[in-house]
Amino acid sequence: MDKTPDYDTIIIGAGPAGLFAAANIRNARTLILEKKELPGRKLMISGSGQCNFTHAGPLKDFFTHYGDNHSFLKPALKSFTNRDTIAWFEKSGLEIITDKNGKVFPRSLKAAEVLNTLLNDCRVRQTEIRTGSQVSAINTDKNHFSIKTDFRAFTCKNLIIATGGLSYPSTGSSGDGYAFARKMGHTLVEPRPALSPVFVKDYQFASISGVSLDYVLIRLFRDNKEIRSHRGDTGFTHKGLSGPGILDFSRYFRNGDTLKINLSNLEEAAFEKQFTSLAGSNGNLPVSAFFKNSCMPRSLVRAIIGISGISPDKPMAEISKKSRKALAELCCSHPFVIDKIAGFSTAMATSGGISLDEVDPLTMESKIVKNLFFAGEVLDIDGDTGGYNIQAAFSTAWMAAQAINSSR
Image (tube, rainbow, N blue to C red; front, side, top):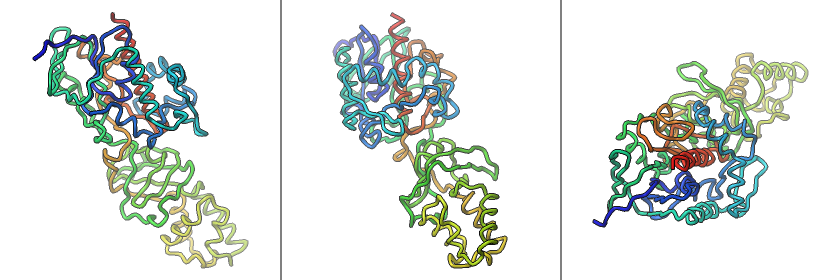
């Protein structure tokens, strides 16, 4: 075997976190090891290939988009903000646009341009990237790491694990980093699919697949107790529910949970009051006429009335109190029992990962192993849709890079 070269830093994983870390490590010999034949596979499919890589909203709003673990990210997001990300890419020559929802994209709407910008900056730093290099083992020897691949071994002073989570395993995110970290003494919070659509038990809305509702209230029930609520755009699919409201909330879901969704944007009491008032003033109107000015799409109204078992032509005055209450519940607190949460092949992110209690939020360095760093989705962090996950990858990678820069 050839003499093993020494590197200041080795990064495992050529995704957004790994590439961004390498692009910001100064005056050092840096090696990226990527098991796939091409770098940035997951980045290339992000945002349906358009790569929504951050969000343009106020920084204070960012902290509400990472679930219960947002506090860990605060130092990183404050040190390298979304504005810093935009400025960094613009300085590197990438033209950027922001859509009406605040999502930031390359002007070309091609993820390849974001990837090429990162790769170009890595070249400027003279970073070596070895693709097709599956890491099989990591050993520590005093203040150095020995990284074994299928072909050879490498040594380094600093090691960054940026292998991603488990979502979209075909891109290389297959949990390798979890195994490496556990072998070095780290604790793993059970990885679960996040940003996932859900399949619904006894689903009755397949006929309106593609219909969506804006900013509806979604309440999560487990064992008949409400445990969380959320608002967001929600869509009907052939087998269940999706849309940003469901995807962002899915980090908390479990199979068997019930989602109660307000499809009408009316409280049940208000719904009944309006129904009773119209029935009293014009009782000959058919039930379907009550929904004439509703925010609910007509196809959804038809589906709801069908589920209720009430004839759409039945006069409102003839609707019993029991039927009226049942209709109000179907419209204002419609129950959807989660049969199954879509798996990692469909989920856009991973909830869970390396325990944050064992990582310094100011440097992303392990509290257990000196000079071991983590960046990106391998950590127990996951963001909402809208560019928050890639921004977290950049911000955590930046922290690791700066810690390595300052240690020399």
